Amino acid sequence: MDIIKNASLKSFNTFGIDVTAESYCDIDTIKALKNVLTEHFNKPLFILGGGSNMLLTKNIEALVLHINLKGIEVVSETKNTVIIKAMAGENWHNFVIWCLEHNYGGIENLSLIPGNIGTAPIQNIGAYGVELKDVFVSCEAINIENQTTRTFTKEDCNFGYRESVFKQELKGQFIITSVNIELTKSNHQLHTDYGIILNELEANGIKAPTIQNISDAIIAIRQSKLPDPKEIGNSGSFFKNPIISAEAFSKLEQNFPEVPSYKISENEIKVPAGWLIEKSGFKGKRFNDYGVHTKQALVLVNYGNATGKEIFELAQLIQKTVKRIFNIEIETEVNII
Image (cartoon, rainbow, N blue to C red; front, side, top):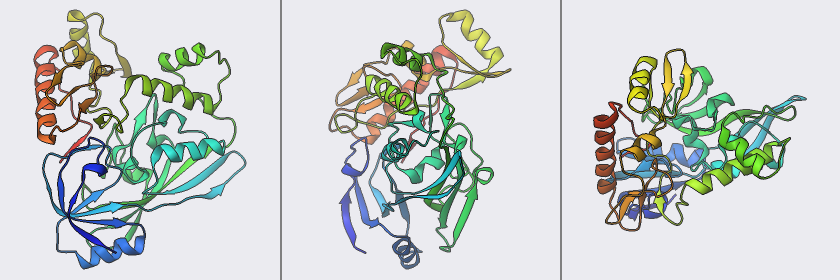
């Protein structure tokens, strides 16, 4: 178990921010994880997964533990369903591909979401009408303080919109090591409620889509709007879509009749943050080596050598401007560190 001093984290975060870790350790077994937690129990720790949902604004004065646990296995199955255990270090999109190759349905709408399995429950990742909680069974996690293993059920996780117990009351207390999800083997329930998915399927002449067709459509849609982190540093959607009251939406619609929306409940309306940001004049705007993506206003980008602090200040400017124009507060989906 090698510990590297003064390690660069540039290649370990999708924004490509060049910051330094006081020390760094790659974790590829649960035994190694428990050992390092025992040996360094009195030192500050920083848990690193796929590096896709964070903005690093400073050097990390801590021991960075890169969770690189690998493995995918079928735990149990019935005639129509299967429960799969995936280790925390598995890449999420590669896992989706693996499931599609086995004709397991339920997460095809979550294709091409960046990051690893272990961070998926923390964020309750979601896209195009599907969230992780819809297929989540349980996850195993190590208690950082005493190195014991705990199993969290769906109810334990207290999932919300891009929220979980791991971002709230248990933040920084556990390291997720594996996740169990339940998928369908047959009679797949397809989620094509979003018009953009139907348009993509129609453009390809697909009238009776399979889960692979849905995945292909999602990938095409995401690639048409979102930049590849390997080409331009970014962390996908930087902001959450705000949910406002029906009364507040009615006032908003009076001033902006063209505003798009999605009804969540009788008194809750979701408004696309990307639309709010674009209408505020930020889409495609560039400031030195950072800015807002030209095709998707939800995405902040690093064109090469921007600092995390610069990108964070841009995010704050966007939040203040949206608040001033629309009287709506938009929250960051990305973790600011």
